[in-house]
Amino acid sequence: MNDKTETALSSDPTEVRRQKLGQLRQTIGDVYPAHFHRTMTNAELATKYETLELDTESGDVVTVAGRVYSSRNSGMFMDVHDASGKIQIFSHKDTTPEEARNLLPMIDIGDIIGVTGVVRRTKRGELTINAQEIVMLTKTLLPMPEKWHGVSDVEIRYRKRHLDIMTNEESKLRFQQRSKIVSGIRRFMENDGFMEVETPMLHSVYGGATAEPFKTHHNTLKLDMYLRIAPELFLKRTLVSGLTDKVFEINRNFRNEGVSTRHNPEFTMMECYWAYADYEDIMDLVERLFAELAIKIHGSTEFAYGDKEISFKGPFKRVLMPDAVKEATGIDFLAIKTDEEARAAAKAAGFEVEKDWTWGECLAFIFEEKVEGTLIQPSHVTHFPKDISPFAKEVPGEPRLVERFETYCNTWELGNAFSELNDPEEQRARMVEQLEQAHARGEKAKQLDDEFLDAIDQGMPPAGGLGIGVDRLIMLLTNAPSIRDVILFPARRAKAD
Image 1 (cartoon, helix red, strand yellow):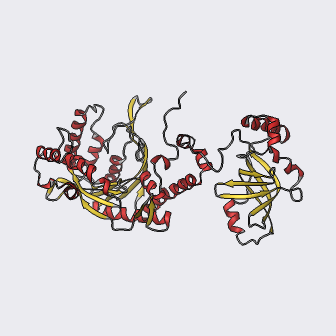
Image 2 (cartoon, one colour):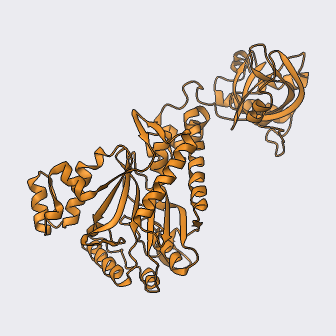
């Protein structure tokens, strides 16, 4: 529609659209028809007619559909986009019936239309459809954001993701890539012999990780429940059952904690358990998975994140946590015998530690402070303190450490893995100790998961376990600066009145 007609209707763009909608209801009836069948997508069209010569008609009649992104010469030329790409529509008195051309003034940017016509390539090389029929499929009542700048306000981008994707090719591509990555994880795990299962998202007892849960209430059962913070304890029961020796789940977890560029209270993990394997087998699995995903997205194990060049080509660097801390600070934790000595050594080196911290908590804290920020290329950090690892087996000959690793890249933790503890008495003792510590911190709602412990009493095979933060991995692979850039609809604060 041209500016003069629009001004005649109203000066309010939204009101203009409502007036046009009223006119369309009177003239064509159903403005939101339920049935319309296109013969191909815009991408399929581009592929099929890739070799069509300049200034040539194919003679083929096709039907396409999509959203109008631009209109020129009073609608004579329109660019119509579907999810796969765009096609140019040409409406002229020599090729387009008057009934179809009469619809053009009623079409606004953002409307969804269907077009049937003959495929041709213009003298300038633009693949085009000479319109023979135009159908209004959806009349939009709100103007689209200005095309060339899109949605620049970050808050609006996250709150109104549909507008962000509609006007930002980078965001659209990123979420298409997210789908490929999640699908790629699933195919990799299945091809490696893992069986996918689904475990409950509502737990009567929360566990499997240390985190603040979201609380809800089951009305029928009259039971307070918690949104899942980790699927670990249910997946391990699957190993106990003998259903499969290799199990995985791509799951949504919920932790009622802070928000940052790398943290979101609702997030996606891939968690797996592999009977008769250990943490070194899991390291190999991680390397193979990461390499395959990088190749799937970038065609190579090498890719850029910001100004860094990242390589997912294995093997990744492996470093023991005590060795990394000693190299960074000079503190040899393996030579320190007691919690008191550990706290004193940390304070002497300038670190502020709590008066009740254990040897392992001091070691882990200094690692986070001095080493994490140096891990740019993918690295497996192994031999974590047992104090902070209640589900991992001890390192032979060093009972203060466990067979656990975390995979880091770009200074971020991407994965966490153990040689899983399957000694039922040791598991119970560690969980009781963890519970007592939680209660001492004021977490009175924390309970012992007796059903899980009962299952472990039945006998769980030795196993390697892994959890991967899918959102952070997607951030890396799609060059996203914030976790909210890879979550389609991140939680936002309520809008101010």
